[in-house]
Length: 76
Image (cartoon, rainbow, N blue to C red; front, side, top):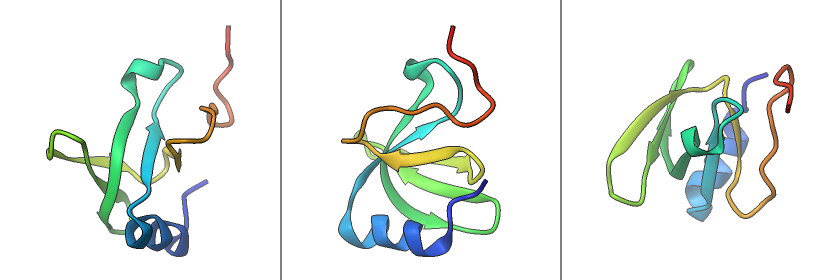
């Protein structure tokens, strides 16, 4: 399930820090601010100012919310 354009635009306009959950390991999360997106990818500017391109199909959530796992990943 991909995040919709309106949610991405809301995060971008508000400057909301987001978390991109890619797998079960929290250390693999990408944390930063949404700067741009297209049909398949989202560009996230991390705190160190590097920009990372991640798949839009990953779970994207506000950083201040408790971390969730995407559907289909089981917690051990």
